[in-house]
Image (cartoon, rainbow, N blue to C red; front, side):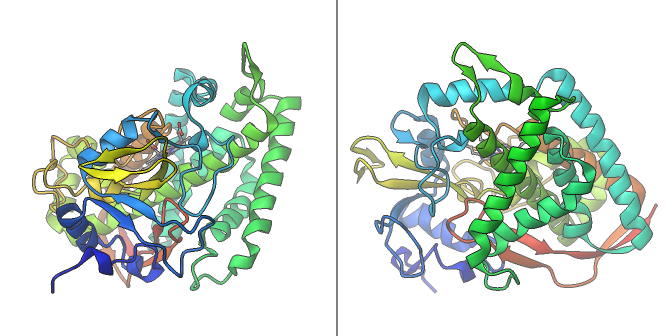
Length: 407
Ligand code: HEM
């Protein structure tokens, strides 16, 4: 069957029911690398203008790095206008300033402490899973580590974590008709998270402890401190950006290794491959589907004119399968050496702030998992949840039942 870009609808949730539609991305790269996505009936868009889709590695990378021409001001998601005070919605000097203040929370001492915590969490999560033997890997393992790590970064008490992250999960998944919580509750769920973030930030201000959030409520430069709004937005950004993404990499990584037993065995037998395996897992799973930008002035990409004010979307999973950039891109290879994937962005000023932490979490989780098991098998169907085109994560592996055999 010949695919025609004009027949595609990237806003249709069912397109993602089995994960990313790589056949669609391949056709776009080949036939319409700068493609104008039409307005669609199902896409709740405030502007009704459609959007541009960039699918080739080099176009995505160049647009990502040209932050004067392609602005972040209207937010990362196609369904949102942006709040203006979230790091992902800012440009130029204000973005640099806020990023610098936030980065100052991740001191080398803090990062080292987080890595030690990641190992402790990984061991206890896996030990608990081994006791059960048959587990829902996404919920029981992959979800747990990033959730606890972000909660450690923010200094969220252990007893609040299950409650808070369940609300977060409902807020993200309620757009999926298969999720039991209706979409009508999204705003009230978001309000609960903001409210909780404000409470915690207030507590840290009154009584700072040894976590990143305590540092952020007190850190200042010549323009002063981060405002309450900026702190609220950062709380929301981190809870989503830091947990969902890394979870998808871990669960998608295991799903892929289970489908390719020779790669799983190689990784078990040669732990030195863990570093390149981590990069390959991140390339292969591409946990963020796209980020949106706004065209600052009339321009063109590959001879296609783009007008000021139009929206473009940069599709990272597509860039990560571009044969012009990767050798045999549809081969999952834990030994891949040249692997400049774009899962954390294309190297522009918004490059993922949590890339180092995410990489370490994935490596540590797989190291401990493979050390403590002699065999892992899938014991039921895997399944995806669709977060909708409005959310840059868009799709998430929701189910992966496995049986673990202790080493
Ligand atoms: C495998 C896991 C992850 C993936 C694939 C991922 C991916 C991304 C991507 C694609 C961006 C946008 C880059 C751009 O526009 O150039 C981003 C930004 C960001 N990420 Fe991540 N991320 C991951 C984990 C994390 C973690 C663990 C944290 C927190 C500790 C985090 C915090 C952030 C923040 C704060 C930004 C906004 C940076 C800015 O706007 O300046 N991410 N991430």
